[in-house]
Length: 283
Image (cartoon, rainbow, N blue to C red):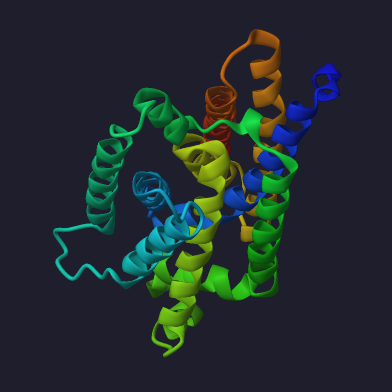
């Protein structure tokens, strides 16, 4: 089961999958809790638009995507919906659609447009090198440390978006003058995470690592710590078995990771249904 690790590119892909999976699955708990699951897709696509634009103009391959992602994060942190007929997800969905179309337009001007679009969507995780892994590791470690130090603050921020009526502390926090600062900091951390994750893994795997483990963990557990740990475990399992499927059956690595994450979600769903049935019978 471990012979694939004799290949250096598999080892590198596994390490970067673990780094990305752990941080994204944790951030996903906040994203799902806030009900803004389109945020990752939108920011990922805005980041990809930055990559496409930098290729189009011929310079700024690192700075421009970061600037695009941080600009998108700032925009989303400032969006407020006052009309009850509208939802934040709808606005984010529009941003995603426009960014996707603009990305395709720019990529169509490159010599290998079709293959470049495929790489934007699913990445090329088997091609990562140690330099990329080191850079991603440093950025993700800094973001992880920030969220670890201010763990309670960020979860209080999420609870303020979930249901402030039942949580007096979250209600008070939402009225605090520093609330917008912490919300902006959250979006900045999401934006930076996604811009570097998308460069190695593509938009779809990044979205899957962000959403699927957190949704599965929420179905299986109660309490922020249990949910976070379970989401991280699911991402680690997906990192291993996704590359296992890719190596042994010669499937694309990015697609394999997403399908394995989907399989883990199915398992979590089945367990959740059995738990609900057992609880109903026990009443």
